[in-house]
Every structure is written in structure tokens, then in C-alpha cells.
Length: 406
Image (tube, rainbow, N blue to C red):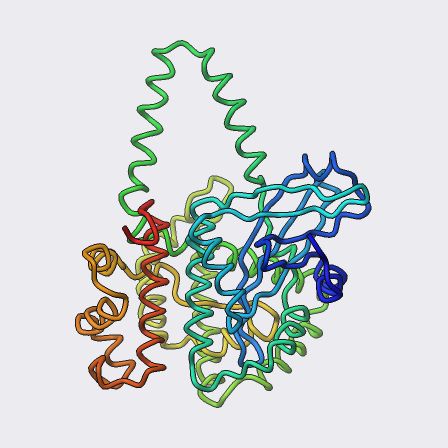
């Protein structure tokens, strides 16, 4: 394994370097020994960042000798580069990352396996990056600028926030299983029945309701952290906070936004009034307020239906101004690529699968002006083909089916 000056520069800047010939990611580990490299806990994440009109997909790593001794590094991949694309496709197919820890006493090789949900997420992000890269207004020469913007906007530690790591969760599961084995079988069977019935109520609604909200939990978490930041900075200083928010709204709000923002005050009063009515020493609503609750709820529904009275775009702009990225609507169900998977399995080429999918997908046809596949430019056909292929890949990973399709 030979490191070039380019690799050394990557190690110095990113903490790791990609060696395409060996298909390995080298990690700077100069201050720790081989034993710690072998025993360290590894977490990996795919991160997509769309900046400088250039899509960037990075693999980030959290490597822990102990909870208080954690090392973060990342490597940015250029989706215009064929070597980078081949490597990422290979990782998504195998679910394995070959890592080389560069210690003072020599290299240590390790293989890290991505969990199923991590492969699904990485495949979705890779598909998004490829689709964005194929848009005609993209500029490949801005990749170095995209790296700089990534470093200025992404805090790696935020991508790994959790209560338990995968390794800790496995150890806890093993410990609980050992303890549960000591419980009498009749008692254990009764517990399993109750738990299975309880979880079954959620399982039947997972795809339709819960999945999208669960995927948004990191965003919700960061929103609460943002509130905590405001409290820490402006605690006891209402005038200062009001001035701060006034400046932000003056910069971001349109006249329509300001009108809707005025209506938001009355909605907030209704919500807080309802919360106060439910609060009490006994946890019950105050008697005089109980008959009014349905009316309060109906009024909130009326004012919030279709976004009336709530400046959604302004709130999104403000969140992003504060560094909180806001995605699509929670609860959105991922597109089902099971048909495309079966078409590919039947022997159709990717181009034929893309053409057939376009014919049966009105939304995609509308995106391309209602045109037939054969009338599109080469770049547009390749865009659809790549989108379908990455969607099928994500479907295969999610459902445990083989990919490439057999």
C-alpha cells in the first residue's frame, strides 16, 4: 500500500484518505497503537450535502476507544469521478467497508459492515447525488468549493447523536437475554404475549404513519436543541430575543409572510390555552374548560388547514437561517420500486425498465414535460435510468433481495 502526497494531504485535512486501487479507506491513527485499532468501536454514516451547485456525498466515521476518547473523520466523494462512483456502488452492493488504520507500528486492516437501514439510507443519498449531478446546470469544477462549504456547515458529531451505539445495543441485548433465561417459562410467555400485542398495534401502521416521522426524529431533535440554544443565550432577556427574531423576520419575511405571522399569534394563544386547560395538580382539565376543548381544537384545525395562518415557507427559511435543515413533509412513504425490480429480474435492460416506468408514472412524465422516453435527450434518458437503478437498489436492500438483480 503506497501513499502519495495527495493521500497524505487528505489524511491531514479529512483524517482519512481513499485509495481507489486498493478499494480501501486509510484512517490516520498515529497516536494510538494496533491493539486499540483492533478493538475500537466503529460507526459509519453517509452524508449528502448539496452546495455550490455541486452534490457531495461523504462517508463519515466515528471511531471510539472509549466514550470520552472519540475520533471523527470523513472523506468526500466526487460523483462525477468514475473511480469514486465505482467504489460507492461496490460498497452499497456489499455493505462492507475495508478500512486501514495507519498506526505508528504499521497498518491494521478491518472490515466494517453497514447495517441494513444504513445501506438503504446510503443508497437513497447516492441516488439523489447522482440525479443532481446529471442536471445540465451542474459545474464539476466547483467540487473543491463544495468541500469547503461542507466543512463550514456540517458538524460531524451531529451525524452520530444517539443514546446507544450498535455495539452497546448488542451487548445490552445479550445481557437481557441471559437474564430473561432465568425467568419461569410461564411468566416469560405471558410477557411475550403482552409485548407482541402492544408492538403489533404500531407495526400495522409503521409504513403508513410512523416510518416518515421516525426518519424525521433527528430533525425534531435538532429543533429542540435549537430552542435550548435560544434559552441559553436569551434567558431572562425577552427584549433581546424579540429584537433577534425581528431582525431575522425582517430579512426573510415577505408581506404575505408577515400577515400570516400575525395570525400565528392567535393560533399560539389557542394552543397554549388548551395546554393550560389540561394542566393541573391532578393532571385533569379544569372543569370549566372541558366543554370548550372541542371548540378550541376545531378552531386550531380550521386555521391550520392547508397552511392557512401559518407561514410555512417563512418558518422553513428561518430554521435554515439558524442552521437547521428542514426536509419534506413527515410521513411521506418512500416510492415503491418493486415493479421495476421485477421488470429487471425478467431480463429487461435498464433502459427498457426506465421507459416502462416512465409510461406508468404520471408524476415523472409531468416532470419531463409529458414526453415519451424515446423523444428525450441522451442526458434526460440517462437521468431517468440512473434514478430507476438507484431506486431498485434501495428497494433490494430494504427488502433483503439480491442486487444486482438476478
